[in-house]
Amino acid sequence: MLMKTANVLVPHDEAAADFIQKMKVGALMHADFKKVRNYKFHKKYFALVSFAFDQWEPRAGLTYQGQPVAKNKERFRKDVAILAGFFESTVNLKGEVRLEAKSVSFAQMDEIEFEALYNETINVILQRVLTKYTRDDLDAVVEQLLRFDR
Image (cartoon, rainbow, N blue to C red; front, side):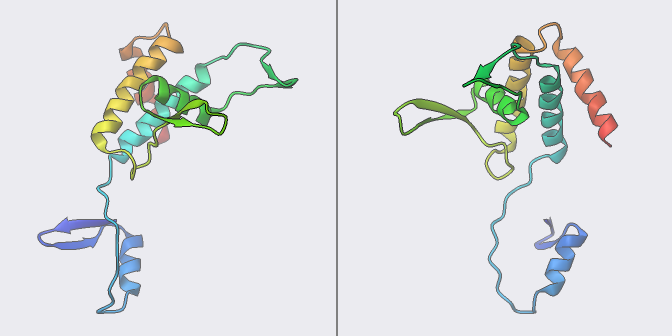
C-alpha cells in the first residue's frame, strides 16, 4: 500500500517499505493502482452477514439425492446479495438462467456500490431472517460484534 504525500507516493506500511527497499534504483515497475475501500466497513458487512447466518435456520430435513443438505455461509452471503439486487445474470450449459452474486472484493466493488449493498443486505436480512429485529437492533448487534473483534 502506498500513500500520496505532496507529489510523491510513499510506503504506507512495513511490507510496502520492504518491497520498495528491495527494488534496484532506476528499475522500472508496472503497477495497477486501486483506491482502497474502507476496510472497517468491509469487516462490518461480514459481521452482519455472519450474525444473520448464525441466526438463520433452514427448513429441517432437507435432502438432495438422499443426502442431507447443510448450511453454507458463502452460499448464504451470495443469496442475500442476489436478493438485495446485486447480481449478474448468466446462462449455464442447459440453457438455464442463473443469478450470480456480484463480487464484494475491493477491486470489483467501489465504496458507493458497497454502501448500497450493505444497506440492502440489512433490508433483506430484516425481511427474511431476523424478522423480529429493527434496524436499530441489528445495528447495535453488529457494532457490539465489531467491538469484540478488536
